[in-house]
Length: 229
View 1 (cartoon, rainbow, N blue to C red):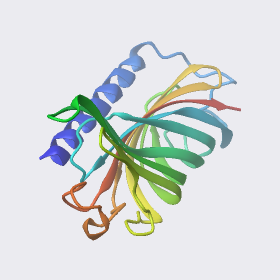
View 2 (tube, helix red, strand yellow):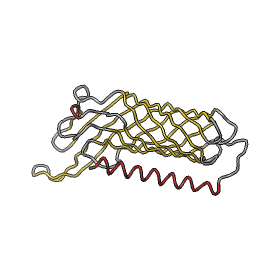
View 3 (tube, helix red, strand yellow):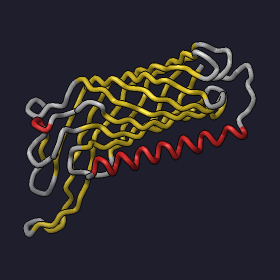
View 4 (cartoon, rainbow, N blue to C red):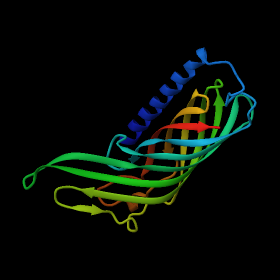
């Protein structure tokens, strides 16, 4: 099945990143007054900017082909030199995208395009473990409020925008997430995240005929930079 295969590949990719980041323990610098994590600072805040690579599990498409923005603000609370938590307020774009080549006796070769665009106000809460001052991993959950959606299909014979009142997506959803971060320089931090729906984003009964086979869920990889003060 597409869902189990893509999920396994995403988790494998995430843990590969974690292993590479953990390898930096061997050459991480010692603590100094400017260190963000593992030092004396309790509260840290900053801005986030990056991108999502997404797909929707439960449609008939395969692969992370939809790109979207991931941007907002983050605040950390460090409980100890090894443990902390963070909360974020984000604008996050998710969905699905596919372009395929089809053959028709009337049109010859033509392109068919199907896209789901989902815009969310997202609030992730993450528990972090600081491997070193510069490298940490985390696990958490994110609340998503759907603020906009658009679903469309285009091919040689017709173009259509799906009526979101007739085939609605869920307005409130929850994701689970895994996170890995590395301080690059002073307050500049690179972050990679795997995120997957814990609740359904659209029930099977609300999917347009022929465009899905089960309850749908978001499946996402995120790459971002954070600037922390």
